[in-house]
Every structure is written in structure tokens, then in C-alpha cells.
Length: 530
Image (cartoon, helix red, strand yellow):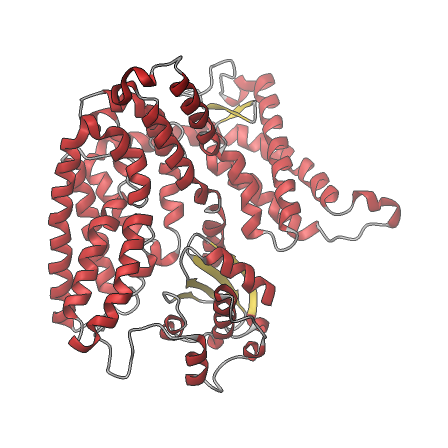
């Protein structure tokens, strides 16, 4: 079950990868159409405003069509065969579901306790999806329906029909089954989801009343779930769905940017819901403290080579918001350090909330600059300055706490390994020379070594036990997620690090190889080898 959940989390992250660029476009579009910053040049009706408004509205594409994106992208990771056709089937199945729901509510809304005549949005529980007035089930509804279609596709896509029914085979057969399955699913959605919406509203009220403590709990869980690959499931309903604000925090904050930029009120008063997008603080201020502690406690002869590892993975965390490379350098070596890291991230998030420094702080410095610093600096620089001071204090705290614990308990963090172990990453040739006779049969696969992604894919395949040991493969933004037949054939975390990855997380037969942002290219070569 855990493996299925992890695959689900990785697959649903596919459309989220588009958010970084969309967020940058919205950030700059909002900046250049804000009169308080650009004056009369950005007034409605000017050529400047018109051009940038076109760009801004294009930037909203991803955020305005989130349910459709999640529905159509889930098969990319979960369909066992013919992923592209399954994407089409998921889209038409999802639209069929929405038409069923819309018609049921328009005819018998009172029976289901829904006022279908109400305007969409707000507390009505209704939304417009692909120009269909329907129940607002957000990302959850899209993923549920798409998941049903994927299950139907995996089971029935290759069913052979009599020759005279051949025109109904393949995707058509999948849609025929989907069509009739969506009827009871739509009825159940109308029957159950309004009550779920009541529960969601109650949860929103609970979160709102917990204030800073709620922010701390959220920040802790968001970090603590990273080893299991489930942190996406934790934050997605807050960031991109309606857990704390209609449309999700990203969408609501981006929409309100002009008003926030023009106001001198505190950020916490203007956008209290944005307190939950707080994971950037531990990335920007925590990861440098951790890196400094590793460097300070490393053996003198290993500090130079350790520095070549720490600089890129720390900059990746700060600017791109991808923390797995640095966190997985110590997660399995010293799990207590990771728990402390989660606790410090929670405390930092609460401290930032107390000083009123809130906003869309979930990605790296590039993303948060476009959505926060650039458009809002003019009237809110004092709060950002306060946040910088608090963050730097916590960088020192991270350094002191990590350094103390590493020395006290002699954790074998990078640079403190036994003399026989090396910090640097090895080439594939060096690895093979060191492991002669220990690799799976997949080592015989011929790959063009001039292609680093192909070389990485081959090396990973070998360490996972060869092609015959692979059940299926998906990926999220940084990890290659693989299910294997025999987990005993998979080698150790240290071996994976020796070929240039950031290690491996094992959970039974479910493997997560931490590769980084190049993982889509590695997966492409990996699947070609299979």
C-alpha cells in the first residue's frame, strides 16, 4: 500500500513542475501592471499595461485549470501501458463525470443539499471546470476520477474483442466502461461530497484558530514526510486546493498581489492564509547551517573534497528549493539529525509567522523573489528585513545544534566517514572496477558513455538488480521511483552515492533513487534500457 501511495504522490507531482515557471510569469506580470510600483506607465489602458496584462493572463493558465491538469497528467506515472492514450481517456472520463454531476445537481440539487442556483465560489461548494458548473471537488476529485480511469485502462485496454467488434477495442472499450462507471461515481459524489465540504470548512476553522502553533505543526509534518515521499500529499491541498483558502494559497496570493503591493498593512493581516507556505525558510536558512556544520566537523584532509559536494547541493536548496540532495546526505546516516532538522524548521516557521513575514515561501529563492520580494518590496521591506534577521539567527542555531550533536554522538556525516570511505562521487568506470563481479546482469547493456543521463540510468539499473528485477518505474521532481521483484538484489545507499546520485530510500520492494532535477531524462533512458 505504501508503494502505491508513493507512486501516486510522485505521479500527481507532474503538473506541479509547471508551477515554478507559471509563478514567475505571474510574479513579473503582476509587478509590471502594478501602478504603485510603475506609476502611470502601468495604468490600465496604456500600451505597457496591455502588453503585460496579456502575458499575465497567459500565466494564469496553469492555476486556472488545475483540476484538468491533475486529471490528465496522473496516467503519465501510473498507467502500465500506452500512457498517452490513457491521458486522453482520463480527460474524457473526467469531463463525462463533470457533466453527470452538473446535470444531477441541476435537476435534483435539493435532494443532495446543494443550492445549484448559487454563484460559483465562496461557500456555495460549486465551481466552473472546463465551462461546466459542478461540485467543487478540486484536486481530490480530479485525482480520484483519473485514478478510476487508470485502473480501468490497466485492466481492459488490451482486452481482445470479437473481430466484428474490433472498432470498440482499446481506448474506445476503456471509455465505454468508464462512461457507465462514472454514473454511480457521480451520484455518490453528489451524495457524499457536500458533507465532505462541511468537514473541510470545519478543518479550515480549526487551522485558523490554531494560529502560529498550526503553522509549526504543518511545517514539521511537511519536512518529516520527505523520507516517505508523502510530503506532496501533505502540502498540495493547502497550496493548490481549498484547505485554507478558495483556489489554494498560490492562486489566492497571486490574485491578491496588486492589492498587497499597494497596501502598507502587514503581510499577516493582508494574507493570513499564506502562513502555511513556509517551507522555504528551512531551505534558505537551515540548509546553509547544516552545510557549515558538516564542513566544521569534517576531517581536515576531507574538507576540500567535501566543499565541492556541499556548495552545489546547498545552492540547489536555496535557489531551487530542492532539499533532497542535502537532506539525504545525513538522513540515513543519522536519523536523529533529521528529526532535529524538522523541529528547527517548525520553530523557524513559527518565528517568521510571529514577526508577520508571510507569503508564498514554498519554493526556492528564484520563485519566492518573483512572487514576494520583487512585487512587494516597496511597501513591505521592513517585514522582509525582520525575516532576514530571524532567518540568519536560525542559521546560527542550525549550525550550533548540528555541530554539537555530530560531535557528541560521533555521527558519520559527510567528511567524517572511515578513512577507507571517500566523500567524492566516482565515475561509472571506477565504480565498475571496484565492484567487479558484484553487479547484476544488466551491466552488459551497451550504452553511449557520452550521454551522462544514459550512463546514470545504466548504473542505477545495475544497482537495482538488473532489468529482470524491475516491476515498474515512475518519477517525481527529484526521485526515480522503482518497484522491484527482489529487494535483496538492491545494493546499499553508499553504492548509489558512488555513481553520482544522492542515495536511495528503501521501503520494502519500493525504491526511491534520489537523482535531482535531471530525473526525467534519466527515467527516459532507464525505460529505454528496460
